[in-house]
Image 1: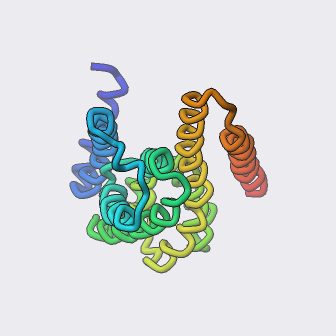
Image 2: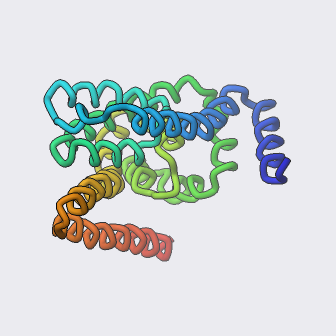
Image 3: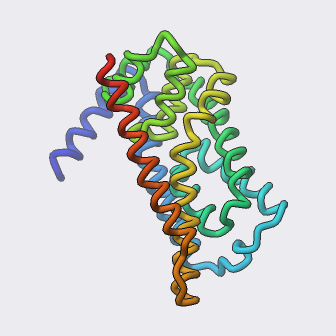
Length: 236
């Protein structure tokens, strides 16, 4: 067995002694998204996805219902779902995805409230990046939620658990989390749209100006987020 796996197993054993609920929650957010991603991709690969390529209102409602449950319970990473949605439905589905994301935030937050609230130190000890953000922004819950959501190193399911342990309040999670999640979701969704445009361009043997334009915007967005975090870290 690899040393890294042994270390992770021993760490979970120690966490379980202090808080079984936290150990289960951490194990869930580490393993279930990987399994869910594999099952979802396998299903899409083996199934006829042509009906999904036609956007309609009831399909959007289905995306809200299924997407919020999948993301809220960490059954699928938000980034993967955003890419798949952009690939199949393009920009017409983006408002539905935003609604699903917001509902998933609330669902994950309320589920996280069931975890032992004395486990915050255990969580932050195992995720130093999240601990660094919490230390710098804890006195300003709105700013903290925004920074955690926009951070590319803190997973969505983990952030929901963190917000619940901090008792940030569901209204703050909904409002500030929405603005924090938009840059990452737009980039992931746009990657799916660009992939669809590239596939269409290859089939038609034409160039894709939309794909090229989004690629430029993608690099600018990534550069902006990296510069944003570097400048903020230099001030603290």
